[in-house]
Amino acid sequence: MENLEQIAEEIRTCRRCDLYRVKTNYVPGSGSEKAEVVFVGEAPGREEDLKGEPFVGNAGKLLNEMLSKIGLTRNDVFICNVLKCRPPNNRDPAPEEVEACGRYLERQLEVIRPKIIVCLGRFAANYIFNLFGLEFTSISKVKGKVFEAEAWGGKVKIVPIYHPAAVLYRPQLKKEYEENFRVVGKLLEKKQPTLFDYL
Picture 1 (cartoon, rainbow, N blue to C red):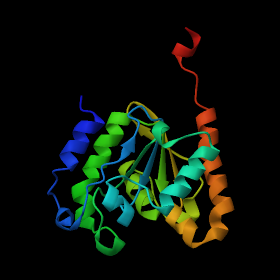
Picture 2 (cartoon, rainbow, N blue to C red; picture 1 turned 120 degrees about the horizontal axis):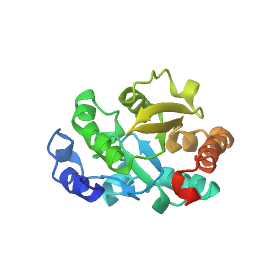
Picture 3 (cartoon, rainbow, N blue to C red; picture 1 turned 180 degrees about the vertical axis):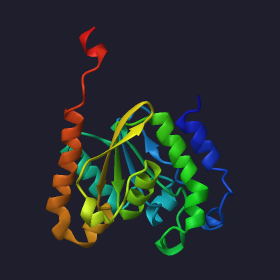
């Protein structure tokens, strides 16, 4: 079975769409292969493109802050984007780019098999909802709610929330954002015991 590093190596030589011509670095994702929670954003931004890591700019600082509030660090989770290269001027990903790149994300999820997927923003939510056969309306209608889907022989919880960049633009959203993160924290506390817990 493949692992995250093998997928990352493949991403770093990808030529499936034209974004590889304009990017500085590929941004495969970072974090734990054993993560129970995966955070999925839209695409790398300027800072991410320069460093080759997801969510390292101001949006990343806010994400780190929110993680710490529910007792997690970046090492406990896996953070990535639907696209692994930055679109020019942070424009929206094009459908052909998503089609070319989305399979990498699907393979990453198959390796990790997380219990919870947190969608950061409407674009990631739309992609993940489609992937798991759920109907996506708008991020403002679904944010902070918990959806459930069948995956990998079990269930996965899907929690759409705003992209941290949206909260930076509109600081009045921060209190609600913290509440949405608390939803994720509570889901982690409510994990079902397994047979191993009784051995």
